[in-house]
Amino acid sequence: MRAILAILGLAAVVVVVMASLGMLNLNLQSGSLPEVKLEGGKAPAVQADVGEVGMGTTNKTIQVPTVVMENKVIQVPTVEVERAQPAPAAK
Image 1 (spheres, helix red, strand yellow):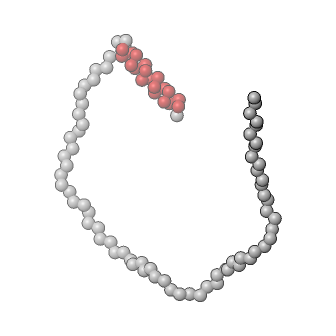
Image 2 (spheres, helix red, strand yellow):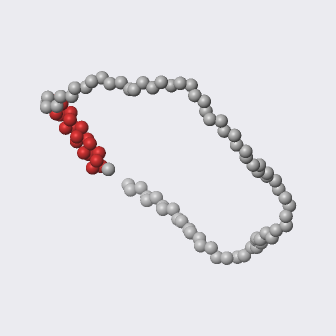
């Protein structure tokens, strides 16, 4: 991708240099876009039959797992940090 952009950039520089040195003469003629005549139209008619979707709730008995919490004594890691003591001021 970079190579293509480099080639296009180099080509643009070459065209500008050739035109400025008089080695390339571009005769531009004015142009115009084609004329388009728009006339009134009509969108197509569409008829659609769609179904219904119903939402609701119902009561039902299902099995649900339960979680029991209990207290246990375990060892957990601890971290102790002591701050550095400031050095005494030199006299």
